Length: 194
Image 1 (spheres, rainbow, N blue to C red):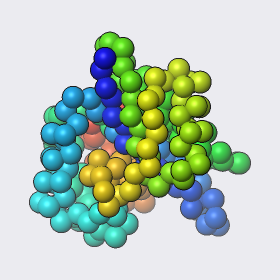
Image 2: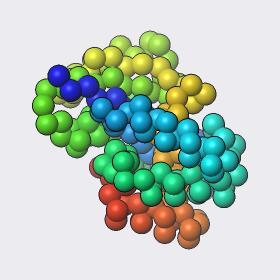
Image 3: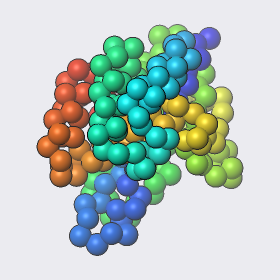
Image 4: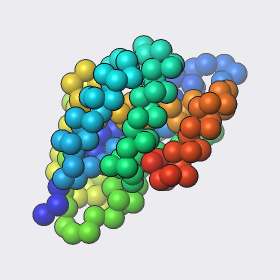
């Protein structure tokens, strides 16, 4: 049985509380199978090379962009990075949107054989882990377990965090360099918007 590993982070819950700001919610999912360990090592190497820190928001912009250029230049990440963008949102149910994003990413990956998925969600409360597992199964996803993950411990969660923050910045459309890199990543199949 094939084993899938999904690393999930989001960006945008804060936009609802900021008057005058676009309300955007981005769920980023990095889906890997047998190459997970290899790509985790690549992410660690790219963090060192680019000077990217563990938290997206605490990293200087130039280091963030350099990190993403390294990831997007690595063919091993093709068809591994997915995002679901929701905008505008009147009364957001962030958990439902996150679960939907995970389900879409796994089914988009179209496993070629029976699979089971291990899902790692940044900062998920322990009480919600069982809820996410149940809801994903209801959506037809063969999930073994939903785990709590922290940026400090998982390079692939930090990758999902970087992609979520980057896509949010690109969708907000305030920086031409970010918009151009996002369009480039989509054209090359490095990010799939589901």
